[in-house]
Every structure is written in C-alpha cells, then in structure tokens.
Amino acid sequence: PMIRKPDSPLVFNGNMIRQDWLDELGLQMPETVQEMEDVLVAFKDQKGCDSAFSFIYGNYNIMVNSFGIREGMYVDGDNKVHFGAIEDEYLDFLTLFNRWMNMGILDPDAFTQDTDAFFAKISSGRTGLVWGYTGGTLGKIQTIQEENKEMNYQPAPNPVLNKGDKFIVDQSSYRINNIGGAISATCSNPEAAARVLDYTYGEEGNMLANYGKEGVTYEMVDGKPVFTDFVLHNPDGLSIEKALSIYAGCNNKPFLVEKDYMLGGYAYDVQKKSLEVWATPDATVKDMPPATMTDAELQEYNSIMTDIQTYLDEFKLKFILGTEPLENFPEFVENIRNMNIERAIEIRQAEYDRYLAR
Image (tube, rainbow, N blue to C red; front, side, top):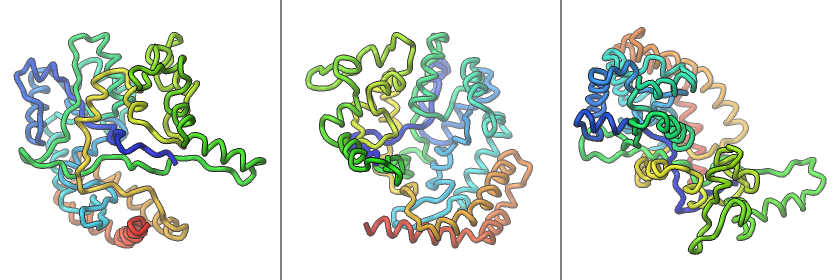
C-alpha cells in the first residue's frame, strides 16, 4: 500500500478566497456560513461578481460538511454509519444553496462547468470564493496571479454554523487507502517483483521513492532533503510532479509518503499554508474507510446505490435550482428509503465493524 507517514498532511482541499477583496472592502475572513454569505453578497454587489462562489466537479463538500454531515455514507463518533442525503441537515444545506442561487451569489454553472470555464472566471474576476485542491487549483491560481498582480487568493477556514463552533467533519484522507501495488498472477519472476516492492519500504528505497536522486532532484541541507531547481524550476518547463517522477516513485504508488516530500512538492508557500488551515485532525464525523466489502456485499450494494446515486444527483440539483420545491424533501427521502437505502447502510455498517475489529 501507499502509506502516509504519521506527521504528513491529510487534507488537500478547501475554500479559497480573494484576500485582496476582503481587505479592499474592509471585511474579515469569514468563519461562519452566515459570514460567508455576507461576504459573497459584498463581492456580488461591490465587485460585480456574477459567480461569487464557484467550483467544479460537484466540489461543494465543505458546505455540506458545515452542517455536521457528509452527503454520502459516513461514520459518526459512535461508529454508526449514516447516509447524509436523507438526514434533516441535508435539507438545511439544500435550503442554503437554493437561497444562494436565488440571491445570485452561487455560480449557476458550477455543477456542470469544465476546468477551462472555472479558471476563466477566476482570471476575469467573476468569482471571489472557490472550492478546490492544494495542488491543481491553488497552484494554478498562483500562476494566474503572476499575470494579475492585484489578485491574492488565500485558504479560507472551514465554515461553521455558529461563531466558536468546532468543524466536526473530518476531511482527512486515510493514511492507508486503496492506492498501492500488486503482483500479477502471470508475473514471470514474482520473487524479484516482491523484492522491488519491498525495497521502497526500506531506508534507501524510501529516499529514492520520495526524493529521487541525490545531487539531481534533491540535496541534503541541515540533514534534510531539499528539492533542487531541476524539480522546482525545471529547465524544460515540467511541473514539480513530472520532473520528480523521472527519478522518484512520486505520489500514488506503493511507498511510505514523507511529510517533507509532500511539502516540498508545492512550489508556493500559500499551498503549504492551506494544509494547516484546512486540517481537521480532531473531527469526529468521518468518511468511510477504504472498501472491505465481500464480493457478494459489493454486488448487492452497487445494485442498490447505482439507482439511488442517479436519483440523488438529479434531485439535489432540482432542489438547488428551485425546479423542485424544498417542501418535497420528505417525499425525496421516502423515495430513497423505498429504494432500499437501509440495506445499503446495513452492508456498510457490517463492513465498518469488520474494519474496527481488525
């Protein structure tokens, strides 16, 4: 497996906001959902944003999480599995997004737009608050800011409902997930393949997998590996990850992920800052761990959830856009219950119980 070391960061996404606009308008960094709404209204009215809050790929999870749930399957502090979309808090989220849509502060294209359209809105100042990733989003924004010197996006705290509340939904990735390596049954020399995999977990292989070749991709400075300009400012214009991958194992491979590797892979200080701002180490509501369902459970679960997910994707957008009245939420929940969601939850509970018993 790919294993993240205990001190390595685990949250790589969150909200990013135009700090320069906050400063210009005399506004504080929003900490609550209401403060975020007030800021978005100011961005719309005073900065002319027609898409004040924007995102891509359905990435709006923080706003669901602000209500203490996740949209899909999750586990609470008592190790009980839930399906968030049928809970009362999900109606609170839908109500919020429906209001934001009616107020003109939620990007109406956010659920369908592609990457180019998203970043074009950032470049042209049509949005001031976005949800995205430390690498692909915040890194890209930094390159946009090189052409827009007045622009200054900063990571925003995970919004809570009331001032002083604790953000209780853990957005961390699991240290061990379903990323890893395997040896094929047709491998001509499985012993040699096993030695290759095993090598990356030793001291020498770990350095190679994380940092590449000393003197080329990194130098030792004060006892720590520091990436060279070959990685950070590649002469051929390669990204940090691509340059490093020539000599190192790079991410999403079977190896031990070092904190310094992860931090060193980000070119900008604001990216490293975001890992701290978005961290949720003590949150009690968690995503489901990597799947350990039996083949029979997986087949049954998928047969149930395929229709439920299609129905959810259709109706949550209808609720948000206002084409389906929010008053029909109880009927929406009842329909999902009739599609056998309780059996799906039961399957995931059995899976999670086995996970805890390991």
